Amino acid sequence: QVQLVESGGGLVQAGGSLSVSCAASGRTFSLYAMGWFRQALGKEREFVGAISWSGSSTYYADSVKGRFTISRDNARNTAYLQMNSLRPEDTAVYYCAAAVAVVPGTRWDDYDYWGQGTQVTVSS
Image (cartoon, rainbow, N blue to C red; front, side, top):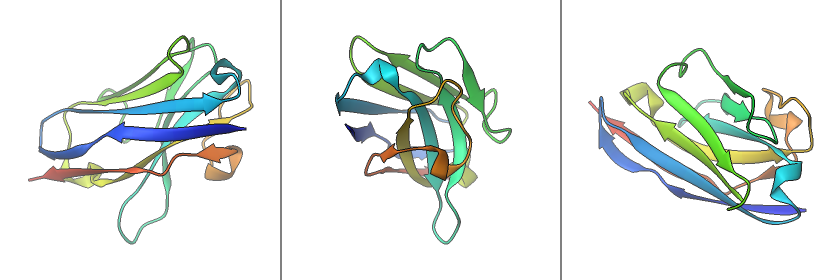
């Protein structure tokens, strides 16, 4: 089992940048592909992006491609979501998730473990 804790996020103006981290503890972090999801108020949780266990492959939703970057540091047991050129529609609670998978999925039920989420608010 792995425990995930997000940190970062907060309030930023449109066009600004924020970074969210996801610290893992428990089983070996490098065994897991990591995903990022978000859920805006009144909406379903949606896929943001994911990274393979080695970090060699990343995947992004079309809505964030070119603006968001996912990375990981297996030595530090941490995954990162760097968000640039933020828009008001990016406002949501952001979650990291872990999956035992060679290729990370895009559905929330592809993932086995979840963090508690962190709020990102983008003002116009």
